[in-house]
Length: 339
Image (cartoon, rainbow, N blue to C red; front, top):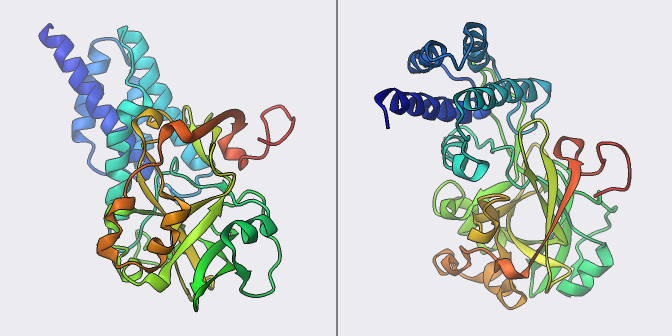
């Protein structure tokens, strides 16, 4: 490889890294980025105005990285589009989403481990379908904890969703808001609106999540018929649903707690995905076999490590749809039935 080709690839690698960081927040240190962009301008891959626009986008604030609106999509489209164009101009193939996942995960999980809060990567599992109430009661042999209205058919963060928890010697079906509220601090030190943190990494149950995970009374089962992941390029991501062939209703391992902000709340525990499914997402819910439900709800924390594994991929049914992720999983781009 020529020295110039090597420098070009280094420049692109740096820009890929900073693009992943930009999805999770503003990028303040851009000196190296300016050097990389200048190199692309000099070799004829980038125009000067494109380089300037790229830099400008890195400094733009994202007010809501968990529920991105127009500002997130505008930034993502501009940054991703610029990188796609430069790779094409150089005659190079851009790394796919799986190859770029480690950088995205690193920046998203740096936020996850922060003491102030835990915003998540927008592509993380942020919607699922619990199924019909009576069917859940039958499968889990639970009773209703109290009188409750039915929740939404597709649950999103902050929505009410069903959970199954222990009460006395039996199981009860309860309804709570999906997502632990975490209050973040703005640039001026002001308190921002709470963010719902609806996923908890299994390997952090002994760290950030330990105060709840160590108490069996704060563990729960999340009934689900299927869950969704976003697939594709930012701005045009579509919804892919995953379910189990062997269990029409399955149990997703969860944690719950009371909160001052939203009452009782819950979050779902995540683990590394099966290699065969890594092209959809590199993480997946911790799914528990029926014979393991009681262990999750009663065993000491140090005995739960055996559940830190993905469900076998050959039992996972995949339904790729053309439903835009930003639509909430319900509307197709040009009409039609829900996905």
